[in-house]
Image 1: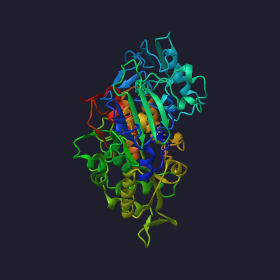
Image 2: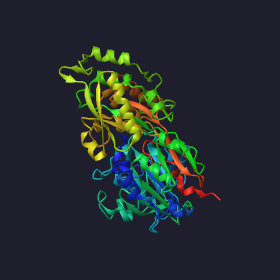
Image 3: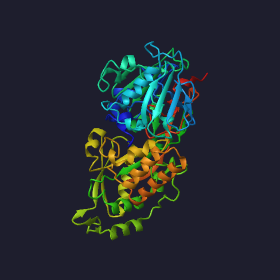
Image 4: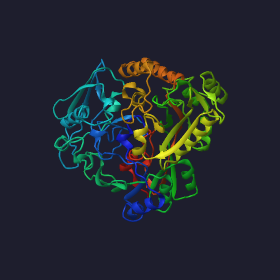
Length: 531
């Protein structure tokens, strides 16, 4: 779950026990994995999107399969042209971005793509009536205009440094999407795009099936049928992969390692910005107390979590930015120090009771912690966090549920959450920490409020000077040491196990959101069967 509006990318997770999940989704390709065909593939993912409409947030970070953006990311996360013929021409004041468009591109219904579709897409997303939880990511846009059929000009309110990265956002056809209600129309589940695949069928809670677009401007894909089997439970995905029901799946480390001796399968490890954290809601008398937050930040043993839960496939997290990133603020690492954590609580008046649990002014140092049912990594992180907290005298009760159960409780109860983006720091931190976004769905789940952080977020967003931006993000990370708001635990690698029958597989540096647009199938349209 991410402060970058998980609702748009990976909400609506459905429950399913092992037997039920296997029975309900068995052989989604119509037989064995891939339907027994060399030109078909079936992969298991944990989440399904709430919508397939880019106007409501689908595919905003790229790799949507059904659509293309003006630009796209390659394997090294470098921007490359897609519907545009080149990277944008940027004015000297960095307020104007001009894109020349690829000619001869058609939507999957055969109608031509042009500049008016780009204008419609961005204008509609920015419309206050459009329920896109990520529209704030386009806050810098003042206007977007078509100059003929082949040129689009964006004018910005301020020199937003990572704007070009925002234009990987998928473009939709005006002639289809404009004819229906943006929030409730059929386009959400019956999309039309310019991408390498078209939607064959979406069986909610079971599978999403794609067919190759034979007239795709980038060349017809060799994988003609591609199915994403929605399998929430980690154990179920592993079982189905082992049974031959899936060609590939994302798995936690403890399950991925069970395929190590299987010569017919290959494991891919993707580096990520994906973190796991615990929200500490301001509205909770215990979790919202600054001393409790500071103590928990020191009481957690991050290294032990990496070693025991991730089995080394990750690293300790001290904030949203991973160590090793050029945006990481040196000196903000926190060592596990239970003694110091206990002293902070003592000094703040949180005294141990007869049962070892601390109290202050008649309030017990206790709060619930929710995690997503079926997600073993979240469960293990939650249990480890609760164990470490108890040693400091704080009672954390772990509970599991679906997002439908968890979301109404987020203002008062802690959540084992997640987030992270390999793009610009603004992409994750603004929605995670901006006080004005508190209570806005999955944005700022902790209702974190810090005037210094708010100012730094705005300074970083609105400056075109890299040094100014680095100073601002350093300030944010140092403020999170003083008053955490969230306890960051680990940055995790994503592990995928895939049948070794395809050539051309690779991984990108991945965001938190994974499954539909990430993994070795981020560019499935370029796979070819091994001979």
